Image 1 (tube, rainbow, N blue to C red):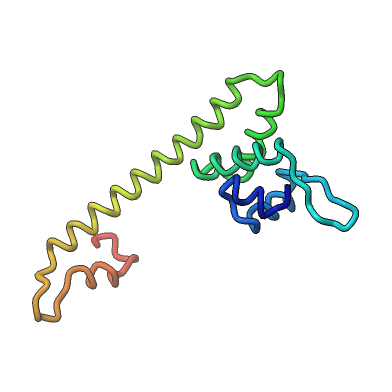
Image 2 (image 1 turned 180 degrees about the horizontal axis):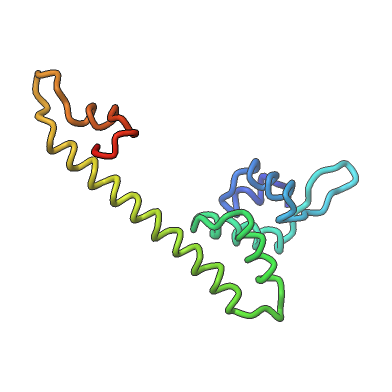
Length: 134
């Protein structure tokens, strides 16, 4: 299969596929004229990587997970450890987003939204970060 075919089937853009090749996550065969030739196994690896990246695993995590996937003697505890760390990071991001949402919600409700120039949203955005009281 050519890169366009694999891109369509895997749902990944050709640029991403080339990047994964450049960093060694996949290694498609090359024909004499230099064109990439992808096999079914490459397609499965790309789908695997696409799903892992959709779950926001880092490239290094993807490398680790791919190595574990290819290792018939792997221990599921290793896969679980990588996944638990990713879940911890997602939970941390959720907490940060919830804090940002609550802050913005408070500021929006504090703003009169009328024709006067004073605005607590703008006041908060320009507050002096060196003042611990703010």
